[in-house]
Image (cartoon, rainbow, N blue to C red; front, top):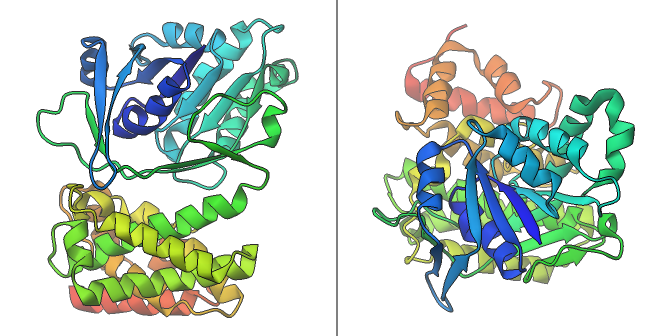
Length: 387
């Protein structure tokens, strides 16, 4: 069996590629980073190091890597004969993956079992986004190609921090992971992925993860950066920061309970598990790594505005989430392009324009005024804004 995985970075090697290997797949990594591809091809094995309670080392073998920028034809050929295609590239990069898959499907033997495609991204229904890109590119050929693939959305969760110097292609991760996959698209032939679980309704799993893990991780980073704390674990060691993060997650849990009927006690236990993971001092994670790309994290359907908007529409509390957004507005990292853009925009735009353009909220939305207020507060700290 063969799996083609787009994105040979730490998540690709330390999570998705690892589980595919354990399922018996020969893994073909596709990436555009030439040094990384060369480094992977230079070794016959790498080790995934789990750090923290219950951690173990796992050796991964049976893989190769292709530079898709230099050899797209090779990637396409591998897709044509693969059983599974997965991605861990970021939602905005899926459009660059789609052409390879379209070409691979065109070469695929129509009598072969359908290619099983899963986008493993921090986004709601990312596989649907990839399928839409593929369908648009295929155009009139889509009717002929559509039977050659099945698409399943997934929810993935594993903390993979910045790697220690000199690690090579080895990867350090936390012991915990979760990979939930839609069951229905596969019929009676699901992919063999040990540790993954297949569910009939993925939406609660996706949103529970995004609105707890991603919201909590980013909130910890932004409150920590604001307080001058370097490490994620160190930020949560501060009782004030921990209380602010917990308050934000109580608000997202209230939404999950109202929207999906999830049990309040189970959500409380899940929050405790997540915060315990963030407190793992064996993970060398920094507020600067987790907080990067603040403009994306403040966008309409992301980890802050997404749940806060739905909560506000239901009349639920959002003050702690809005406070976390305020901390995100203060994230000032000159080495992160989005952080630089964020601070520039705060100086150049009035509060209402900034709120609308960054968050995608309409002025009449019940959340808008609260966010506009924290934007104005940040602008006051910066000495005012244009207009």
